[in-house]
Length: 327
Image (cartoon, rainbow, N blue to C red):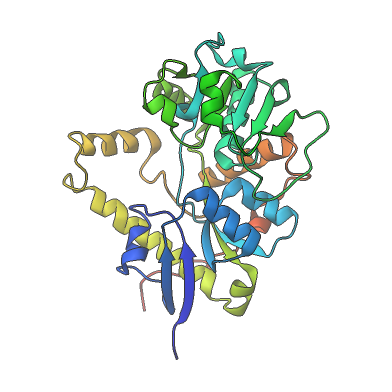
């Protein structure tokens, strides 16, 4: 019998590259792997058009997709995580020296719903006392999944002929929570600075307090594909897990990257974050992280109710003491 052919859209990471180069593949599946897509485009095309069978997907948008019953399911695979303090930028002429100075300010975001923004907005509120409703939010993009904002939430979209980075430089907005490093900062524009000078120290302190290494993305599967091939979610999960293990093993080679202290960074990560901070599955740590994100999404008016994790993700267990390598 021929293998099932699937399209997978995902980032080109060390922990997914074995799926792209074919050194790891799900049992019974031939993959066409698409990596030449930026995250926001990939998420929009999957959620709006269902163009791919399987896709790396914004965790925040996935929560909304499930609430409005879009035909998309997910497995507990988390290809992308990132701390977010590094990506808060301010106009240096606005007197913003600490997080509470953001209260009453105009703050730009790529989209209100983006997972990166949801995390940092929640962290600003829970850890630094900056209520999300105290800010005038300006979004650049349409939302992956449309939602009705609460009436007391100040949220509007900027004109199509403008972008957040230019608006931050000119002072039309006071600050920006971004999904990535922005060009004016990289170019050394004097009007732009990070809010957190020592962002790493803030991120380390946040992890030590909360135990959270923020999950950005999940792996979504079109419902019709999962229903047509009930065995598929488990095989995909296993393949992603093997790919991650192969990618991490490769990174132990200090020749992989042109960085003098590459192995030191790996060792530092393990000492702080633990043996496998990129773990998949609904482990205790991952449940805590995902439930925190759900709490932020609910408190900020995107989710009407708080779903349980077991109803959000496909069960990839294979029974007690099963799934090992013994024949």
